[in-house]
Image (cartoon, rainbow, N blue to C red):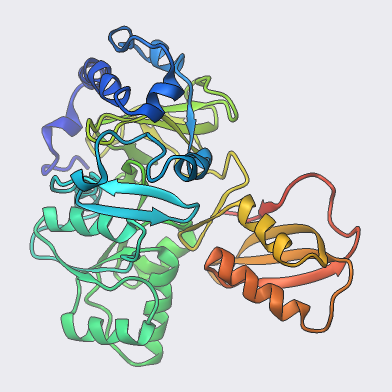
Length: 410
């Protein structure tokens, strides 16, 4: 099952990779400390002393969920990016808001490796349906695909009818986007009698990719693979032909820690994903992503020797990713502030017909007949996602502090 196209860095002995990562870490840490946010966060640390995982684990974690407050307090990057915004190629604003720069180098998000593992290569035409508007998702996959020699259709999400026209005209061989939207496109193509069989490969991210959906794509001749990515570092891990977990990307140090702490757990235990990026222009030191996963034992049969994680296993905090967009407790609170008639709120995230769905359950003090529709409009305005609203009597919801309940089963 070994892939002859693998880069030598992907097949190194694990000890050699570990030594290389840890040898580069002190200089990256020194660069980070030139940024005032990192200097405040990390405190009085000697970069030359951080040459082991144990020393790294003694540094504080930076929680992704805290970045919006840092960025608002010291715009644009909270002091966590060395240099000036003008030093970068593109500047983004993700929900939160979280402000992120894109480097000027080719494939700045390290996405090409994941795409190549999914079978993408020179000459492929890629329908990229990740958003190109303010958020970096579209550019993460776009830059990686173009680095491989692919032609990219910058489609973005939505506009299904126009997407079908593009599929009919360009006959793309590959797809990037959420798995849910690929299913929507394929179903719409069937309904419109448009041939979408040119798409034979896909790299999906941003939403769950359960076995049932993988099998549905495979039945249509589409080999779908999944990637785990975040705006702060790009591709964290990606699926390979072995279909046994996700391989951690090169140039990253990944830890699994006990949720709510920075303490690493034994391999195999479920914990929160923490990543350190060795990008000297945009270093990230122990960024806690809020996602749960676990390290798999052994090596992948595909020939890659880096560690593997099981993939996304839920959230360590209450932030949920719905249709590729993060929904945060702060957003649920904002809905409550806009509608004082509401008391306790809980956003329930589920799956319906292989698609993420959400329902806002809200206890009501009073309110008129138009309250339901008004709350639904606010839900969409605040989260940028459509959802159902269920107004319930006061006292119906548990008093347990939970405002987002992710009830998806994979």
